[in-house]
Image (cartoon, rainbow, N blue to C red; front, side, top):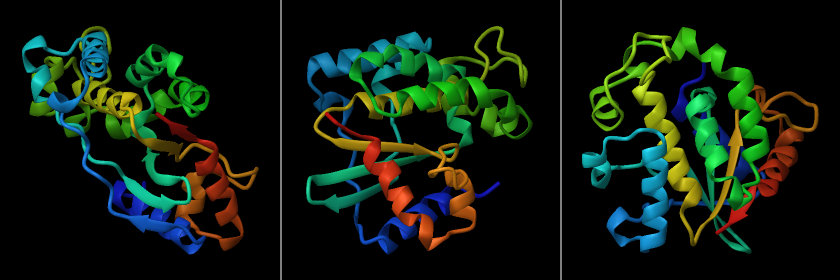
Amino acid sequence: MVATGARVRALASRLVDGGWTQVAPPRLPRLADLPDDQRDRIRWLYDLLDGHPDHFDRIRPGGWDLAFDTPDGLLLVELDEEQHFNRYRALTLEATNDLGLRWTPAYQSYCREHEARLLPGWGSGQRWTNPSAARFFGEPDAPGDFTGVGAPRWRQRAFYDAVKDVLRERRLARISVHDTLDGNGTVETFLRRPNSAHTSALQALVAGRVHDA
């Protein structure tokens, strides 16, 4: 398994090598600064994942993975590793289907096909739950047990991904380690063993996933 930070750095390096201009990502807007309707939708997603009602105002999604200066404006890029694809993410993707997010069809299939592969590496310890995730989404079930709360950390990650999906006034592209590059292997394979011949395919994948909001 390649470390998450290493994958993002490898992706940035490949896109820069292809001529893209990397810039510092902006900060995510604060919940209190969002319009009421946008904040209400985020609250709805939180409730959908059974978030604790008393802690909603304390949510703190992580920052954007990457940002690039393009002729069409700032482009935010998220690289989603294997831990992002599970039943909770599938739930949020279905709930935001009306947005027409370009990654939704592929991501829904990855959630169905790859969740079982997560359990050996992501089904215990801090990857299954942690104090922050449990505070927001409840006490966990035993590792690998989804009958109740299941995995609070998985729920938290799915929620924070969904928050970024529904934010407006941004151009966002999501790609996954499971995506393929014109039949030349997956994004994961490319990031492990970079090949300049595939850089244009990677750029095309990102460009094809751009969603303006």
